[in-house]
Image 1 (cartoon, rainbow, N blue to C red):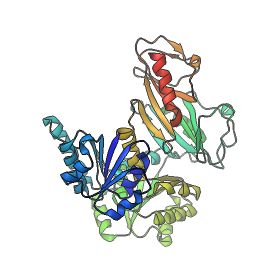
Image 2: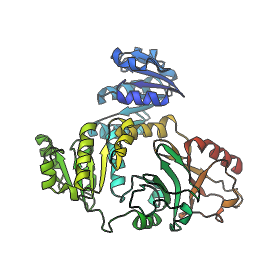
Image 3: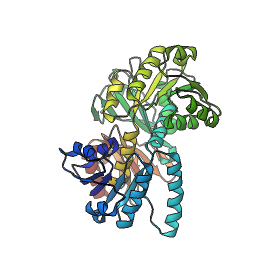
Image 4: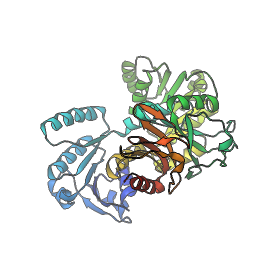
Length: 450
């Protein structure tokens, strides 16, 4: 696949580094010094502006499969994408940082599609993607990751095994999970595996569960919710785009929210826009304020300033004050695991969220790929069984690699299968497997259903 990236900033670098080994990458930027970082990678660079038709032609836009504009200027990205669409059939992805641009482009895209005119295929607002990820994590007690399937009737939840966990050092086969819950994966250090009955839950493991929404609620209440009371209060440190959008989402829930922002003018804006959120004009590292506002008693604190160093400091401070869960934004994806090693419960990244969007929906899109888990180490696949398929007992399948058929959708029903469950024509199977094994699993079912 030929991919042209406009913007050699950090976002462009992450995208290029992710895909250059398997795809033909060309990076365009007006600053030659920013392109020097790619000298050791097997890709091409061009100095110039992608809004210039001659630069796009030099890059070979006519033969491009994907064009991604990710400079720091929304307007430049928009113009470049429209120019690329004018000159080619490439899929276009436009990064934006302003809500107004995103909303306007959505309206324009809808009207252009009706008229058959040119449009931008994907508008990517990384901060909004991050807000959605944090919101899902906050609203599910103690989970470090949440994914929905089957219109919310089935879920994937991920929990960390702590010192006081009832599951610590227990074998999977000896753990009495309800019939609507399956353990599909365990992440240990930097390795992920599909567990067997004799595998144990060890300290700091991330246990990955799939099942019905009701079944996972029961599992959470039995094994992971330390307090039986529901989530009551949240503190957000940082009132930028992410903090503001997150507080706005939380105002739709019964959760009481405090937001700490050091810029007074920004606090005035936040106070006008947020009707249920308490706005505090201060620095998130102000220990006196944190004590006065009893931040240590919050169920969750989320630090989402634009500084990794400040987010880490704020997170460690509130952790020392007694906050039960700390969620922290990281700017650099590589630092996420470091943050979690020093005490942060969940580290999240807008760039990672954007990269996953590009990977799953545009560049490495695969029919039937529902989601990736743990930085791409595992995949959730959807396999549709043809109507002509003859009934087959699940335990009779001889899968070539370790995988878990976690959910069967049969019409409006969601089934958590057991060994004796029948797979029938028109079923939709949702399967958890390691990414390196996904193609083998797809191939097996293609042959089985062929």
